[in-house]
Length: 305
Image 1 (tube, one colour):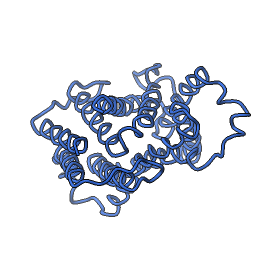
Image 2 (tube, one colour):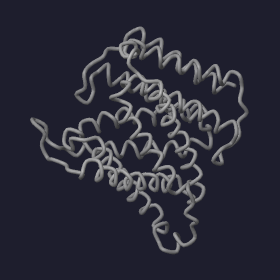
Image 3 (cartoon, helix red, strand yellow):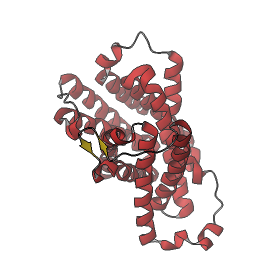
Image 4 (cartoon, helix red, strand yellow):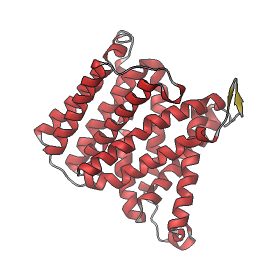
């Protein structure tokens, strides 16, 4: 159990790294949707190669003839795009801190509901009072970590936008549950991750063509030159989704999301502290340390009860 939680945290650490890498790629695409498209495309290509080497039979006509192509084939990828697009819409309206808080709160609420009622084929795990305490402690830690930033915009945000953020924040746990069900349908968590990425790539291509009128990519941007590592975001994202699909049946949706969120926050602190990926430095202070302790405490309560 503890090893799986650590693996979940490591998987979560890939998300801030993916965001930082994609941020650099945006210099060359000049827009968020094309950046996300190239990120998804890279992940799709990598997952295709892995799947083709491991089990080429899953790409034959006879394999597809045996499939029902239910909603689980398409739901995960579409939900991932909804979450991404929702964050893009929210960020300029309520700021980064409240966007994160709203999304995480939505993830926690829907994660507990999925575990408690066994939605999307998830194993039923009875709700315990300490589970609620753990979620409250984790959310309190996230709010405390972002308190200074959120207070500067507390007078201007809209309650409707916060509610919208809660709804879009519910997408990742549902995506994980659907992808886990797809895993059993295709008998491979790596293949399930590929399908999710492929659907997301197609949806993002359509969105980019409609919104940005193309998916342009320049080789230079000022003093910066396009390098291979700028496309690593897709690989990191693919590893994250594959990890979630493989962990969810053993940890449950709630604990899987808790461990990955903790990993995201820890890696975010490391990136900020050292200014990795040429980002501004924000040294770790007492407030951030206390917040991380609160978050880890919330995960512990979810694990022990």
